[in-house]
Length: 104
Image (cartoon, rainbow, N blue to C red; front, side, top):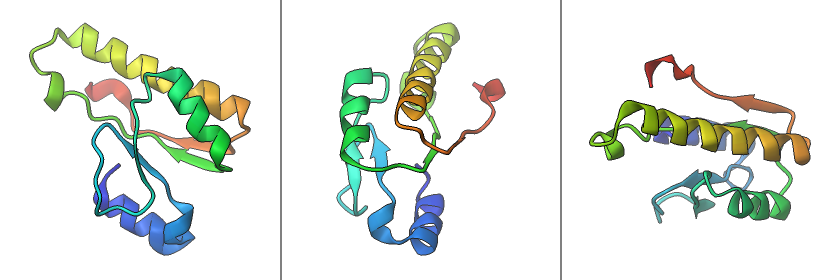
């Protein structure tokens, strides 16, 4: 998640109420979790440990996968996003925020 958005959310909701999930672990972020959201079971396990009311889903797979065909990048992003939607429904998350995928 973008570091600027993370700080703003932590200011608004409190550091202990914002959990950042990323493919890379960043020890500078409190409540940071290293997780690949394309792995549904791992995402579901994390969701069961906390009560989430909102999810900010900001994917940025393009720079890491530039050598892959664009359709493969898009398919991976969509798989991850569908996993987020599934767990959000299962755990009754109130809102999901995500940017438009048209640029991907």
